[in-house]
Length: 422
Image 1 (cartoon, rainbow, N blue to C red):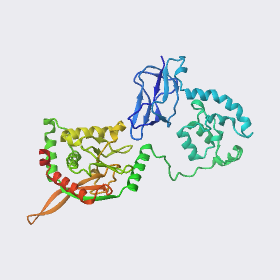
Image 2 (cartoon, one colour):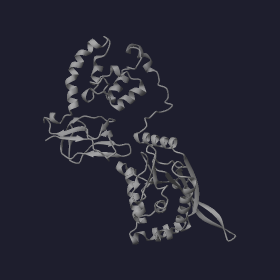
Image 3 (cartoon, helix red, strand yellow):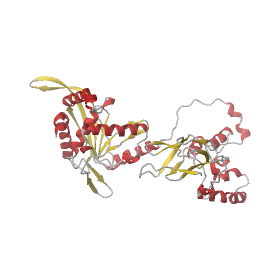
Image 4 (cartoon, rainbow, N blue to C red):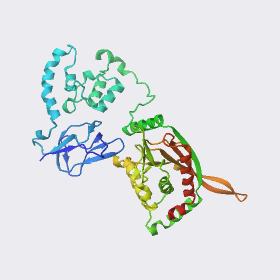
C-alpha cells in the first residue's frame, strides 16, 4: 500500500521547513531507512528517512521550496499502484482547471504572448515557480514570460531559467538573431558575488535589530582574579577519569556561577514583556548558551541550571552545544531562556558589548584569560584575570542592581570552592 510522506513538525513553534536537497528522485527505488530529502528550519537541519520500502512514485516539492509542516511532500509505493486517493486535493483541482485556462488564454492574451507561459500561472493568477528559479531569474533578468516549465504541476524550476539564459531570452533583450553576435565576446571578470541570506542569518538580523532598536542597553565591565577557578579546574581535570566526571571547562564553571548568582537577582533573571508592559520574574534560572555554529549563532537553553551540579551542568551544556553545531537541535531547545552567557574568550577578546536577547533583561559576556599585576602587601603579584561584560536593559533595571549582580558574580568566581560548598 502506498505511503504519503509529509513534512515533519520539528518543534511546536515551527510552521514550515525549507527543502534543501533531494537524495532520491521520482522513480527511484527506496529502502527502509534511506534518506529521502534534507530540510531545515530557521535554525536546524534534518534528514527525512523512509519508514517503508518501495518506489518514489510522486514528488510534490522542489529543492528550495518552503513547505508548511504536515503538508504532503512525496508518495512511496509500488509502480503502477493507484495513488489518486493520496494526491493533495489542491493539486487535483489545479489539474482540472488547467485545460480550461489554457483554452481561454489565446483570447485573453495578445497574439505575441507565449502559450507555454500560461502553464506557469495558478488559479489565483500567481506564477508557479520554485524559490531557486525565481532568485536566479532576478539575478540574471531572464524573461520568465518565455519559460517552458518542466517541474511538477507546471512549475518553473531552475533548469528552465538556465534554458532561457542559454537562449538569450532576457527581459528587454533584442530578438535572438540580434543578440547572437555579442555572445562571442569575452565575459568581463567577476568583481563580486551576491548570495541570498540563509534563513538563520535573516532570523539573527531581525532579532538583533529589534533588540538594539527597542531596548535601552548599557554594558558594565569588570574582571576577576581567576587563580582559584583555574586551580579548581586543573584539579577536576586531573581526576576526571577516576571520578567519572565530564570534561568540565572554564565556560561550564562560569555558567554554574552565573546560574547560582542570578537566582539572587530577580531583575537579571527575568523577561521584559514590552507589549504587555509586564516584568516576568523566574523562580529558576534557565541559562541560554551562545554557540558559534557553521550555520550561524544559536542559543540553546539549559533549563533549571541552578538546580544542577557542576558536572550535570557541564554534561547538559555540551549535549546542547553539540546538537547546535551538528544542526540537529530541536527548535524547542532554543527558547525559554531567562538569562544568557556568551563567551568569546577563545578568540582572544578581553571585553565586548554583547546584545541582549529579547525578552531577556541581561546577557553576560565572558572574555579570555589575561595576565595582570596587583599590589599585595606592597609587592607586585601577577595573576590570571578574566573579563566580564554585563549588558542589561535599562528599561527593566537600573545600573545599581546590575552592578550588584556583577559584584556578587565576581566574588563567587574568585571563591569558587566556597560556591561549590553552598
